[in-house]
Length: 57
Image (cartoon, rainbow, N blue to C red; front, side, top):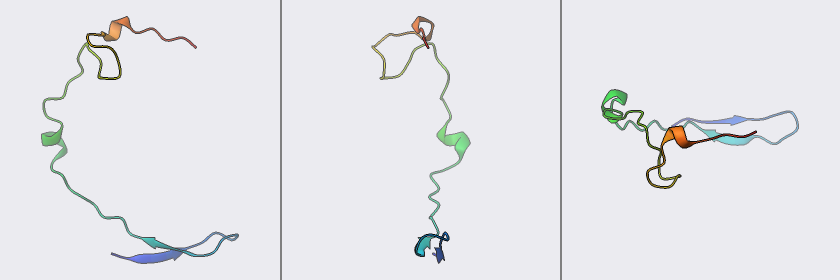
């Protein structure tokens, strides 16, 4: 890992560490089987269809 310092003209220098990349697998494999269905997720009551949503401004 690499550590650097960075600053703005009005602040003290702070240590900065390069983030790590964690590889969980191929995007194609991880997202396989996902689709856009007619029903919504757990944020809505069971059985709520997308067509039943209304939006107001």
